[in-house]
Every structure is written in structure tokens, then in C-alpha cells.
Amino acid sequence: MAQTFILKTLLDFASAHSLRGYPGDCAKLHGHNWKIEVQVAGSKLNSVGMVIDFKEIKRQTKKVIKELDHTYLNDHPHFKETNPTAENIAVYLFREIQTRINDDGVKMHSITVWENDRNCVTYSE
Image (cartoon, rainbow, N blue to C red; front, side, top):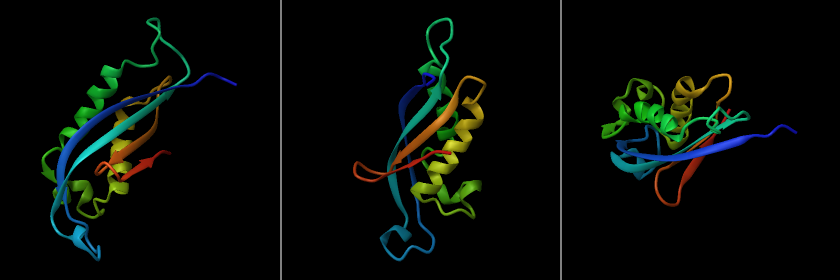
């Protein structure tokens, strides 16, 4: 079996949203201090002995979350039609980060989005 390295880094951002069609308080405007765990995978190490530098994963992820930080997610173009649930936020972040990270040696593995200390969703493809 081939070796696989899975690297994980943590970042965060703050934003507000309201869930369209939700039959409860989350339909009202409210905010979260989101935590995200980005995991990438690779099987080959470079000349330094890394799959990818953690700094590069963070740099690319920060580009994506910068557009969401301190915003009302429902106003973001992606969430105009897509409800900004934790699940849909995870899909969006995964695919946006994937376009910046993936290459021949590195692939997005999964993303975990925490809306608070007790509730999270993990997404992978």
C-alpha cells in the first residue's frame, strides 16, 4: 500500500447569515465565529521533506475566507441562491480551496467547518 500523508491546518473567520426556509431561530440574522480544518493529502515528499508547506495551505485558504470574513453570507454571490448552511459553506470552501491547492502531488482531502464548539460538518469528494 502506498504511503499517504494527510496535513491539517486550522483557520477561522466570523460572519453572519440567516437560513432561508428554516422553521426556527436560525431563520433570523445571527453570526458565528467559524473554525475550519483544512486537510490535504499527498504521497510524495519534496526535496525539503514536505508534501506542501503549511504556510502555503494557509495562504491559499486565507484568500478564500477573506471574502467571507465579517460579511453577511446571504449577500455573497454563491449564497444568493444556495442557503448558507454549514454544509453548503463546507462545499463552497472545499471547492474554492481545491482550485488553489490541487496539483499532481497534493489534493484536498476534506474540510471540517465548525459553527460553534459543539457542531461541525466534514465534507470531502
